[in-house]
Length: 353
Image (cartoon, rainbow, N blue to C red; front, side):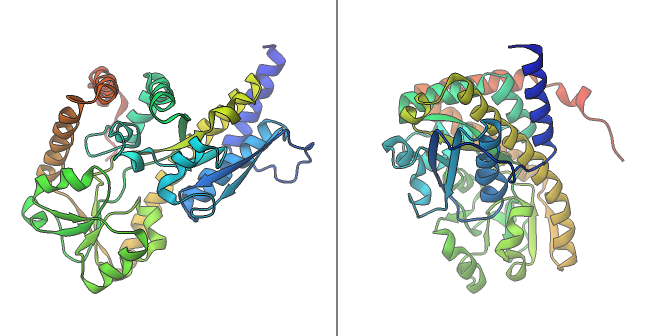
């Protein structure tokens, strides 16, 4: 690649990362028109995730690749996006790998669970520690799709609760809505987890059918209105310390792209992933202040709860690895990475107060 081309690409990346938009730029007729099925109907995952990705792809490829994003339910059910992409119903999809944990629990190692590292370490593992390559290989072999990260979160809020929750005693018998691996793991804390469709969560919490719910990050949860009917906001999200989301691509559609356009699509996904992380991190800080002003009480979980949740998550993962070769392979990679980073806090973190 020439120095001029390298400089051009670096300039493009810098401009896009700065949040510039290029919707007014004229492009030639697209060579590849993709449909993207999303697992969401709106919100940050749609606006600064799927749609932002489509816009960046169009710009970076000079309009050669055009992606139309379809909300959940139009091309596929929200939890079945990966299957729809594999079947060719859509050329691409934006989803969370953990939705397929019932098919192969390895998916939650890429999507985040109670035993995961935090978002900063997860991003380093993905892009520098071999995680990206493992994600690609695993999904091609087991699900027949091309897979890479697209969008990531900071840690979620643990609960919006009608009751104060600080200690292990407070969790005993607590009935709360959740999904995925945390349904199994949280029982070890004495909780009584249940799952239900997203559309039923607000009314169930309002009526007292459940005591609490987990959902997304502090920022993402503002629009749900949970803070209006549940006084207590419990942090941090020990059940979901990180949550990388996924770009799933149909292999035939991928194979029709030139090598250059494949690299540019991958670049767009990486850019959105880092941008979403910094955007949500900043919005979370503002959201915490928002909840305080709304009269919510912010409760930080006792260290004993956080420690036990992490240990339960790790024990759960070790058990899965005994009977799943892929789970074992990915888990060992993450453990080796965490061992390498075990002293990172000594040289990366500085006392701020």
